[in-house]
Amino acid sequence: MTDDPAAQPELQAEIAAVAAQIDDLAAGTTDRAALEQRVSRLCDAVLARPPAEAKALLPVLEQLIARLDAAATAIQQRGDGGDSPPPARSARSAAAAYGAGQTRRRRGF
Image 1: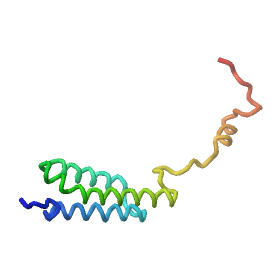
Image 2: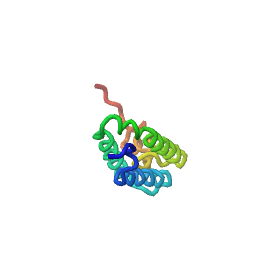
Image 3: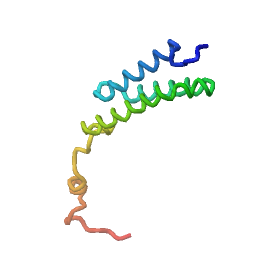
Image 4: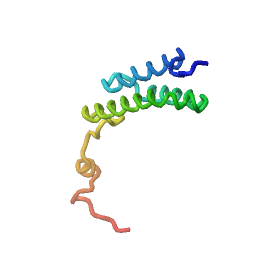
């Protein structure tokens, strides 16, 4: 094994792929669930390494966290941070549709 675990081709390729997918997330062109699964697998791979090797990956992981933070900011600025669309009607129009207005008598419980 090498002294630098980030130099291992398979791990280095996965880190690069996650970084690219995070950048795509910031641009709004990636599936969040797929990214979450990929990050989870990467974390599992890091945790499976001996402590000294895992610790050597801290700078790379910190860079990924910074990219995730930047992507979160970009999503918030675009206003598409939610996974579901905003409600089509306001609460008042929904209440009116169900007769909760003045024409309906209130029942006490």
